[in-house]
Image 1 (cartoon, rainbow, N blue to C red):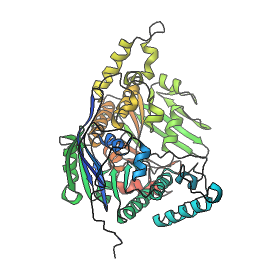
Image 2 (cartoon, rainbow, N blue to C red):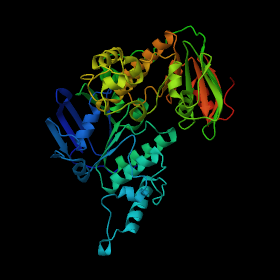
Image 3 (cartoon, rainbow, N blue to C red):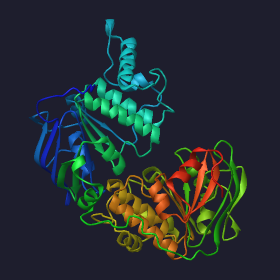
Length: 507
């Protein structure tokens, strides 16, 4: 028997033709969204479509310039995030920000701790309520443990517990699964469904269509700051949603060119770092895309960072074109023709407070300098080449990188490293958190680079991307390469088998 509690009454959230401008930049022209209680509502669109701006208006971070904003049937304008939270709105982000030195319970009740006699904080009451919330969510988290060291998945559950303790009626989940494993995603979905069944309204924002169609009952599409459509999820197909999002057919998401594989460019031999990876050996040749596949936490990013020289390793060698790359020396790696596009573009790939132009030229500033001086015209000229080639959507090159959408930030990081004219490009999670149209562009560019003789080492957690783009798949499990699979033999089944079994499959 279903335990769903059907709630009659007004929609939880209604936006009608909401508009927002930032100076001369128009972020929203006609955002329209209606979220009912007992519903999980998907909000989809390309990066730059306006989804984040909608979230920030609902959460009280921005104020709208036009249109209607109703919450539970009443017209509202939240002047702050605190006002939105107090009204019953909670946002669960991809990477929550908890106080690491405080306990789980203290994080849930921060700023509104219950008090007992003489005004002292009632820690027992806090702890008891935290335990009750976790029991309702059917999750096991110790209320007394420090937040420091918790997984992203557990941190998100704590944010959800915080929302429940506030009796939030609307929960917005913004790319919540990007850093989660399959088991963690299923747990999050179970929690989301239980919240829906209590009569709450949920908004789920994701670029992963398999998750959208598995979890949500309604879907709204945005494009270029405007409302495009709202439909029951079972009334539309994935192809139709993609067409509406990008305004065109994306007929070939994995435009893999056939290339002639050339000489060996990157050679990694017996690389070992205790506790991270062990005895890792592989090669990448000119014109070849080699994928490092495996589960989250298998050690793929750690291998890439060691190869580039960001992190140390105890034994083994790395060579580019036959020349040995010194340990812990990214400058030497760059000089030999190696480039690394990191997984976390915001923290490791960009200076968010600097302009697009400055970010796009960070890796080639010595080349641009004349007598130690870099002229803005020279900087802009170089940045413009890659901004145009990668179709970076920005009002100007002076725009701060932190204000760009995730997909456009990824393009700026790509442009920064491609400007160094590398022989080998390591690209970690190239399309994480970006929309389907931008994914196709990144894949096309990657294939073109390989076609020109560049060697590509691609790390991806998305199996379709691995199978669609790689010439060879190296599967990493617990810091070891357990299988090497050719493009012709690579299937979802044997890649996953190698990722979950120590024996792997035959090389």
